[in-house]
Image 1: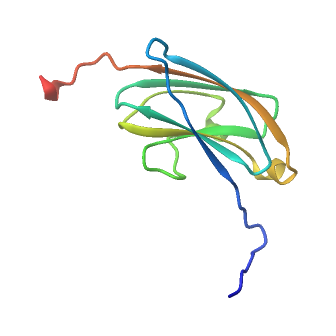
Image 2: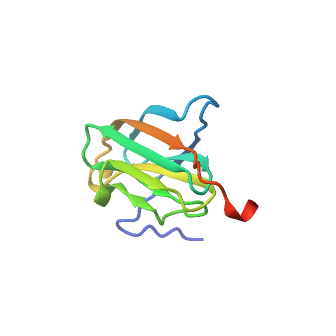
Length: 133
């Protein structure tokens, strides 16, 4: 048996952490750190029609976040690298969304440590469902 490692091949470690809102709060502030090729997925169960507001604060400009819909491992509804540090959207599906925090490969290969703060707000939909009426 042979193991072939191709040049440029990445072995990023994805760390998953579940997020839960207290019943009386709709806002979470997460302060965390990761290093090198580590990736952090914050998993959050959200209902269709709810609104989310996510803000990333960090000093390392080569770090970003994406918002992945339920069932996706790499296709994002929001891509921080191209859309910025703030995501405001009404979510189209019910399920577990992932807020994926990562850094670009050039700084990841250098083993750069990234300290960051995520401000996550969730607003429940106030629209009634006509199918249930």
